Image 1 (cartoon, rainbow, N blue to C red):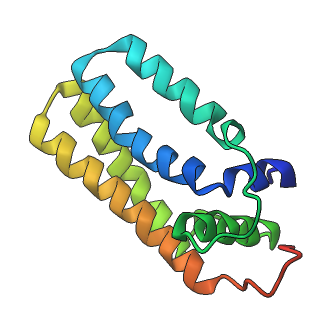
Image 2: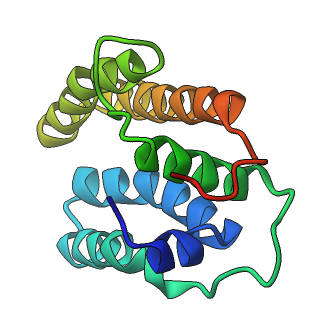
Length: 142
């Protein structure tokens, strides 16, 4: 469970969108063996939730809602990976992600593109399901 101040800063839509868009950069850096770019992207992903200020007000931006839905899900003690729905989406994402990393390692361009898209698609489907279950009236998030 993350501290509230991290969730608050990460709820800035710029944090979520740049984090999402950093994944293809990470994969491209590994594929092209640009180690400095890979290291910088990993550092960015680690620091990302703290790089952006907390939004001044609640936002209608979908990514803001995604982060709040993830926070609510986590605060309610629900696992992100499991056999239930939507957790199964993250469970399915694990072998797809492993295949993505293997495709990068082997420098297989078509497999890299397909598994990158599949990894991102499963993640977006998972968070879209969290948004569907999100209760914005529950301001406590716990």
